[in-house]
Length: 460
Image 1 (cartoon, rainbow, N blue to C red):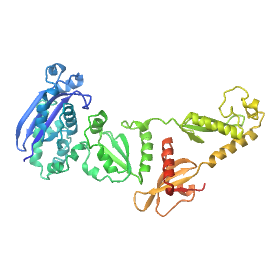
Image 2: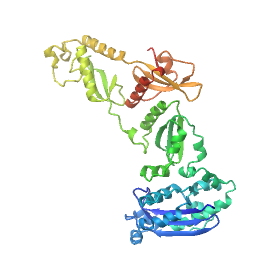
Image 3: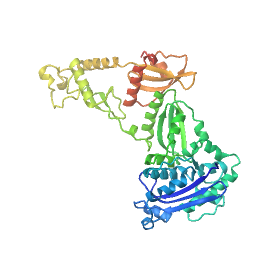
Image 4: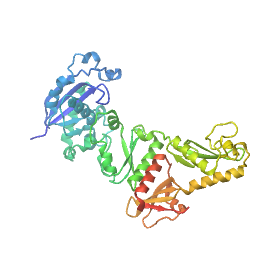
């Protein structure tokens, strides 16, 4: 049976289907030679049409007030579209609305799709713009009633017939053989670029028309993960914003999924992309801070991590930090006041019960007190092991290398396959430093514990 095409254009109350309605739809059925059927109607969306959309389309609240609801015309629309190839200019937008609203009425549309923006870029390369209006001017296609469904659908139908006649490289059939995968991609993204993305772990970046990164993601398989973003036509707002905004995709290959997860976390906090949500939350981890007061006594305190101050060690919560510091005070006979555990003006309570030797009121000298503080810090340092995690590289000539320096994540890089570093200095020569966040500390530590054969202890 010869293919038939349904060329569609809609007007709506907004940009994504699950929160906005259709105000007008036009469908032209084409058999490859000519239009054999057509349908158009206003639709009552039962919500206000924004003023700027009324100005753009000329469709007002009064005009649609007596129009049929979508539920009244859904059966007619479905019968027209069923078993046809769905065509539109920026097809993802129109298809997402029609599919969503049909589904709400119990009709499941499963159509192959063709995007006239993508096809025009291939059939008519080198034109200054591929927006419908400017494309029609370039190709001398007569247009009437711009930004109305029937006018734009008729222009798209004329454009599609021109492409059918000019398609000497068989781009249309090629797109259909790909099961409409091209149509699933944003109109500005070239499938050839996607096909060149490797099937390796890494981090990818979505950019808008101003070349600003709007989303960062990680992948075990970059090629599959990037395609998965466009494999369905969800009506959700974030999905539709993706499809409208994405202009470029770039990526960084990593040796392992662990490296990709680390890099993703670092990049989200560095770039703060608009479409990333969860990983942008500030970390509420706490640290043990060490400083010397004006009298020469070493003081300790647990507080929230500060950007420009490196804590001696970190804790998941304020309570766990305080509890550990209390235990250390008891073990090494430290002053609760100088450890910020008691807020008193003069002597701490430990002076009375003999657990403090009087550093808080300078009865004990700074030299004597600091010896015990340093013993305590030394005991904590002894628990901090330096090691590397060696794993798969980006190719067979190298291995990935993640460095933990005295318990803290330092950075990562790549090392020749035959080399195993013996100390921190030799390891750092292969490493790019990265910021260390609590999330990264945990996933690296957990990975090392689960994969002991990939962990190599270093001398300091």
